[in-house]
Image 1 (cartoon, one colour):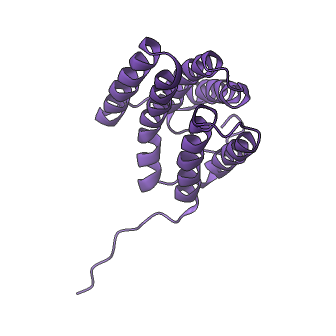
Image 2: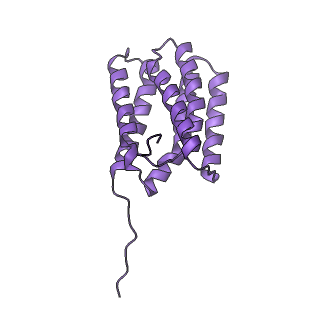
Image 3: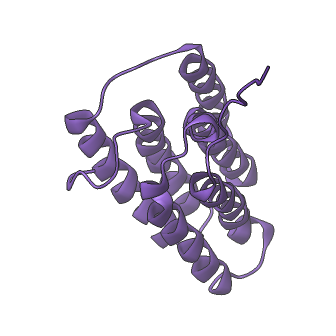
Length: 167
């Protein structure tokens, strides 16, 4: 986005992700799990939010409001709970925050963002390979892997065009 190779998209999602990634990093530390994947997300989402803030256009719809409400509830549960419950609530909050950009890309896929999703998929796989294979050690990776594979597949597909009626 800084180099103008990808159009600005999803400012609200990345802003929510930047904040939730910090919470996820804290919950990862509280659970004694490796921090590198969520730490990378904190950095990535923050830089992307800044780029979108500079280059993007602000829009807020009911979809973002619903996503924010879901993410806020899950984040609140995450703060109030410790251990596994907090970690799972953080993951749910992350997925809820990602729904607006997923829905936007269903209707208007942004192919230029494919590398973002692919790099995250690769990061999740590498993180899984280095995990202890416990639930606490893999729930974040599996959830993120699923979401990011879906996003990568969505952005590389051709957008559906309206059928032209012939008389």
